[in-house]
Length: 293
Image (cartoon, rainbow, N blue to C red):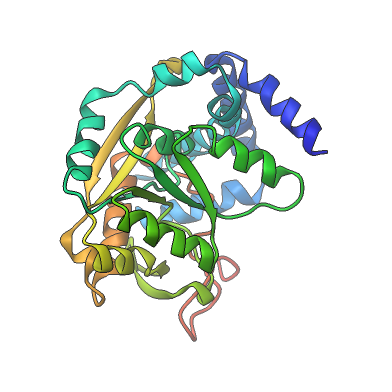
């Protein structure tokens, strides 16, 4: 099965980006038109997270988000297994790259945070043009794990490590060597990994404290990065935001982390993965966020 999946990903990866995005957008339109949990969760999140937006605006964002999520799925094989020359063209953003170089020049490593937004699978390759990058990833079930892991390790200076104790140690070691690390900051992490509840769009969200601990121990600068998907398959643009200095503070770090995620999402809400069940874990005594609605 692993061989079959690898062949399928490689074949898909050779297709033009415009065709892949059209297929992904078609999947998103289908999800928008038919009753399904992805549409229901997307609509619920937008109602709760962007209550001040007009209903028509939330409708537009929801539909665009489902289409963007489909595009993220279909473009991943092109990022992982597509032509090398095309990949390098997508990574050509001199201004954004200089921002990362400036942060890395401080000599304490760099922590790069990529929400589930835009072409997040591309962001690690972009950043790794500056220095070696160790990225945290959640292992998948079955044969897909090796295919996805190998795809994420395509760039020679990217090292994926699992969301385990050993993976966390690898992140810390990389920063101590002055290298860079990449983390998806908007997961709903398991309680065993060290979490607190911090505000996100005005609601308590189960939030990792890993970024705060890494920043406090190493003094590494923290940047948020989003690979914005440009219209008509024109490529990608990389947008960066510096995290608040409070992200390294034990008392305020998780809240500062969520503030940064929220800023990224508000800047480009149509390309955020709104169907992810971000509020699945609730504070003691609170009802199930999804079932109760």
